[in-house]
Length: 174
Image 1 (cartoon, rainbow, N blue to C red):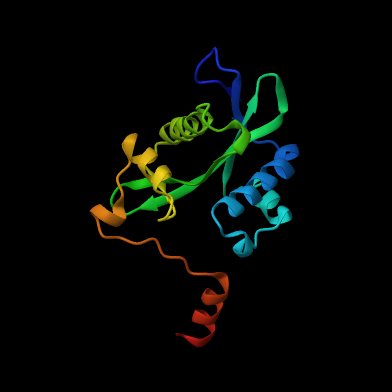
Image 2 (cartoon, one colour; image 1 turned 135 degrees about the vertical axis):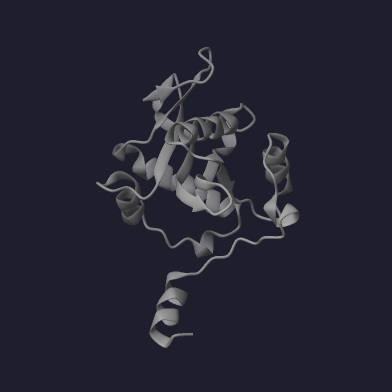
């Protein structure tokens, strides 16, 4: 399903299709560079394909294209189901990225609005969004649109437990 939230927009937001996998993965690598964590990216294109496009996806992906060139992806967002004890069923928006050459045109907002619309259709009570501490412009942008920074307001921190740490935890009981 293709959506343009503004019918006059030259941007089309749509569900990613299997043939989009390589382009989205390339943008994910660009995002890792932008966030200064490319050395931490362990996700392979094969695993990404399996996680998004096979029978039981664990993640959803939407993409932005230009109406004039619908085969070229200029932005994407990943989101998935989660459960938050304060709100119940929610969605988590993992990535929102627009290529450098297409920034400042409202594409990021269109992607976020589409994730939000889909979340509401699924019955979501909220969206969890994670922003790097150094990325103040992005944090301010989300807050300008109504997000609350739980690190500040609820004194909560986002924690990550790597697969290796999980295996050690189970094996050694630590």
